[in-house]
Length: 151
Image (tube, rainbow, N blue to C red):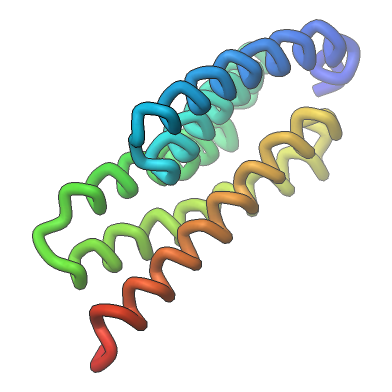
């Protein structure tokens, strides 16, 4: 558990470098007109995979698998929503992604409070998770208002 704190600087630098790469890829995708929520959820999945790898090296297998499952599920459900067969199906898939984002936020807080994640990595991931929650919530509300008034 303490090794993560001792090695925080190299971990933080690696995490920061990976985030910069994802940021550049995200900007390129914006120019090409791709899905913002799709890109952000994909980049977040990459962050979660990085956290998972660090936790696994620390021999933390239970929580690491929980956050890996919920954190990468967000993007998978967003991609399913993009291919939805109806607006109702779209809202349903994004609602699942939103639930997974909230679960991921729980695991991030738990990992930080149990000293498996340092504050800097937590701050980055928590910020991005909160952003996904806000975007997903907004898309769901707007879609319901515009297309599913009776639901």
